[in-house]
Structures are given as structure tokens and as C-alpha cells.
Picture 1 (tube, rainbow, N blue to C red):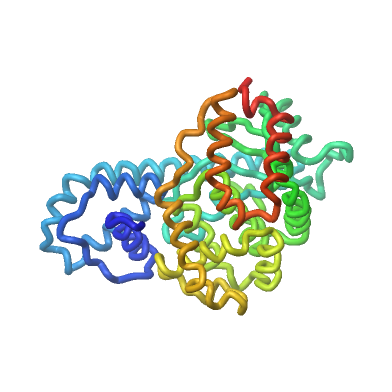
Picture 2 (cartoon, helix red, strand yellow):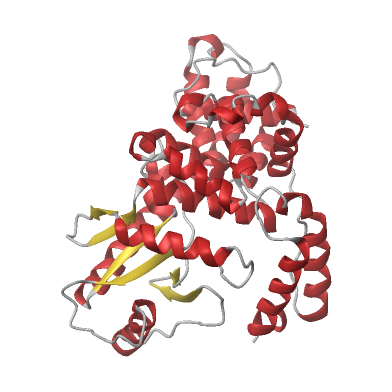
Length: 387
């Protein structure tokens, strides 16, 4: 069930996105709750952008809420300024890291994060996180080692030249800290050990990554590559689906995908995209994201190019759509921290409670998934017992 402050959150995001001119605010507003919900959904700055527009409107100039807002806005502005500061640092770090790899014969493909921020109305109001990269050998590279993939060569180079040792205890990426920011050096787009179906998906993503990509240049002259619009839409949708099925999804992640589609839908082969979504088993989940984007945030339905057979999806699956939205707003993953037996018990309970999500994200059977994930943890014991 969508609560009153969550409805206000939706409205202010729509105002910030330029999709609504309804600046009306309720007579009484629980500012602290609204702030908490925006933080929980990783959208505080864009909600603040909407509030600033709404509170500047003539409709609420004489509202008592303006007086209350004066006592609350410092906390909001403090968070926004910190997001802007972290974004600038993030951008600089990415550019420096790209320069390092470029000089050493690698092309750095940036996944998610910074690349998606460019589709937001105010890019530096999208919170930053880790830096996710996928490395490829540059055609002019002097490093030619056919026995080692680019990611492994790169980890060796960064250790030799910068003294940075990457943590290889994870399944589909190594991890290291560069200038205070965590970097995930992906050798797989998706974890091929957690689900058997991810193996063919990984092959398809790697094929698409090589077929087409886009180049982006920073002010310092360094260059990165970004996934093609088709790969980006599929990868971000898959990433969202995996997060949703395993734990929870937040509104920032949903907006990442919706804004990407809105800006690049003309550059996507939608027949192929929807066909692959169906083969991956996440067609219904993606359609639920579409429904939420359209019904709650006023995105145009036409940009998603919904296949004809799903024209009535919003009506036929309204219960499922509401359940997905409710889980985004009120996640049930709880506390799954810990190590050893405590971790195993918590993760099993979470996995069991999320089986309904599994059915709209994966094609794998429940038994196949359970065995695959058991084997996955046994392959990397540190994921259970720590190091």
C-alpha cells in the first residue's frame, strides 16, 4: 500500500522531472518522514529539486508549510551539497582511472552509475556509489598475453605500478580502492555461478559489448567507453531484476532505467530487446517497471515499445505490479548481515521469502537455483565465513 508521504514523494519527483506542474502540497506535511523515505529510496536531491519548485510556486507562497520548511531545509540542503561534492570527486576519480588504464593499453567500459547520471535532469543530483568497470585490451596495446583476460592483466598492472592489490574473493569481479573510492573490476556482466541461465546471458552481453559501444571524453582528455543503448537497457534492467530478486530494488535504480530508456529508446532494437527479456525470464518484471514508471512518474508509455501481446498487461497484472511497487517501498529483506551459520540461516530465509520474485526474473527452476547458489558459496567460502 502506498502511504501518503510516498505519494508526495512521487509527485515531487514528477515535478523535478518536468512531468508535472501540480505544485500543490497538503496542509500538513511530515517533513521528517518525507526526508527519511527519500533517503531510503536514494532520491533525496531530486525530491528536493521538486520541493524547491513546488514551494516557489505562487500556489503555496502563503502556505504555512513555508514557515516549517525554513526550519527543515538545512538538513535537505546539507545532503544535496554532499551528493554534489561526492559526484565531483567520483567524476574526477573515474577520469584519473581511465587515464591510467588508457596509458597502459586498456579501454575502460563504465557500467551503470556515472554514465546513467547523464540522463538525469541534474546529473550531480544522482547519488554515487562504487565505480563499476569492464576492461578490454586497446587495439594499440603493447600488452599481448593471450593466456590472460584483460581484467587479470589490468589487476597485475595496477599492482605493479600503483601498489594496489585487488581482492579476488568475489565471483564476477575483483575489488580494489582507488583514491578512496571502491572499484569493481568486472570480468562478467552477471554472476555465471549463481544461476545456470546467466551463462548464456553473459555470452550475449559480451557479444553486444564488442559489437557496439559509445565513447565519452573527460575534460582532462581521458576517454571511457559506455555500453550501446541496447546493451545498456538490457544490462541495467537485468541488474535491477537481480537486485530485486535477491534483496530489494530502490526508486533510484528504477529511475536510472526509465530515464535511460526515455533518452535513448530511438536507438534500441526493441524487437530484440523484448525477445531477450523474455528469454531471460524477466519480461514480467520489466513490464512491472514500465507500469510503475508510467503510472507513478508519468513517463510516456510509447517510449517502452511494449509488444502487442502485452497491451493489457497493466490491467491483467495490476496485483503483481502493486506487489512489486510495495516491495520497492517496503522491502522485506531485513538484516542479512553476519557470517558463518548465522549468515547461512538469514540468507536461506530471505531466499525462501523471495521465491515469488525469482519466478518473474529467472527461467531457472527453484531446485537448480538452490544447488547453483550452494555451489557458488562453496567455491568462494569467504562469502560465508569471511577472511
